[in-house]
Image (cartoon, rainbow, N blue to C red; front, side):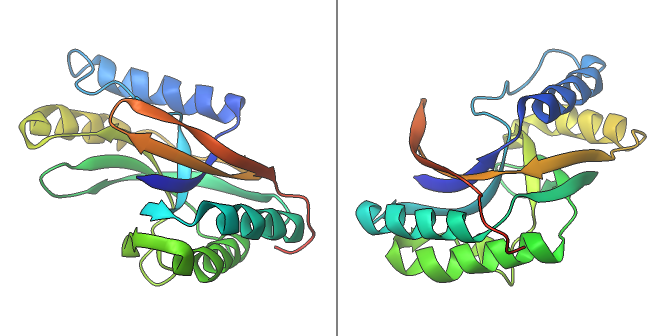
Amino acid sequence: MYAIITELASESAREVEQIRGVALAGCGPDPAPLQWPLHLSWQGAESYFLDEVELRMRTIARTFAPVTTRIDGVGVFTGAEPVVYLSVTRTPALSALNATLWEALSPLARSVNRYFSPEEWVPHISILYGKAEMKEAIACLVANLSTVALRIEIKLDHIYLGYFHGDDHGGLYRFPLLGSQG
């Protein structure tokens, strides 16, 4: 699996990790410690034509300026492997970058995840990747977060192509957003 993401800056990541830790503290041991850096996902696919993706990502990064937005709530993607996430305010600049990445890169993907298409995308930061048997811990986490005022400003200043294969993960390309569009 490959994903185009933006990792949270260290200050924002520490704040989110602290909120996650405090919210989980009353729920028993952490049922699913984070395996990946905290991030916002732009797109995911089974594979990409990597050489062309690198060129297109580089061009997009030179076009778009960093995007400032904020974390503003909590949610759950339901199913057999539920995901607890912090929602991210969808600004026009965020939507424009998502749409551009989708248009430029999805034709270069094999088995692209449609949840990242501009029509379906829910900008978010995943904080717990669960399993069905964790429903009590998930409910406890969401209940504890429901009383927290989540107004964390985040700056998205790069795009990054990473790979995730089981416990093995890493990055292939990382480009700072240097342009003026957005």
